[in-house]
Amino acid sequence: MQIRSPRQITESTLDVARAKVALPTSRLAVQAVMAGAFIALGGMFSVIAGCGFPEVTAANPSLQRLLSGMTFPIGLILVVVLGAELFTGNNATMIPGLIKGEHDWKAVARNWFVVYFGNFLGALLFAWGLVYCADLTAADPYHSAVIRSATVKTSLPWLTVLLRGIGANWCVCLAVWLALAGKTLAEKMLGCFFPVMAFVVLGYEHCIANMFFIPLGMMEGAQVSVGQFVWANLIPATIGNIIGGAVFVGCVNAWVHLLPRKNC
Image 1 (cartoon, rainbow, N blue to C red):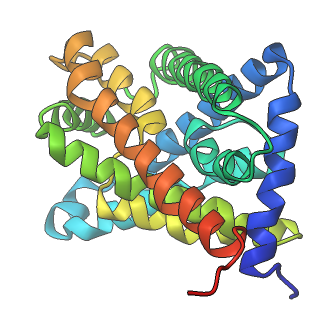
Image 2 (tube, helix red, strand yellow):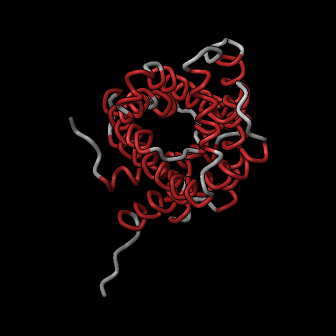
Image 3 (cartoon, rainbow, N blue to C red):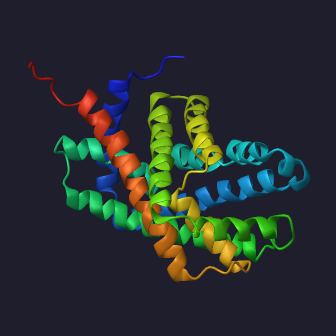
């Protein structure tokens, strides 16, 4: 297979960002809601696959993470292939064009703001309508699993969540970069799969995924307040995701592959 070079991948993000900047707000919002639902779909798939064998995974704790990690990537695959708008991916793809001066911070802020809250709405609607109301997590082991997940995620130290947020979106944006390297469906799917699987297995914190996991746990009875959800997890995970995507992937690749080299 003939894939794009690292420089070509980074250059292709310029076209991606131009298209994002040109999107009317209404279309941007709809595509953001789609992406939130896609990530939530991957999250629910990972719960069913990873938490459905409690007797086996209790003695093999890495197995639960592995099963969840192998199923969660369907969310990002749908986002990438179907052109939905994901906040965490846009943390990286909007940056090279910004550094090159093709758009300004106002365009980046507009995209991130609309997409973030569109993703939130999509994840919440999926959690409420297609999981909670559909009774997918009404019985154990799934009921206990989603409550435990929401409780644990909101009990971690603030700095721990931030650092795990950096790791999560470093992986997710590397997956986006790998997907941009390929041209066929199989290449894009493969590009998305392993980095996303890695962040799930490692236990990193992805703010959009948590817009599904934590509210679902709260719906099922987790003793987590809205304030705890926002302050203890969503804010540090979001900050970490921005750093992991914008700095570790967007800025680094733009500096390495797009900016002119100067002789010392």
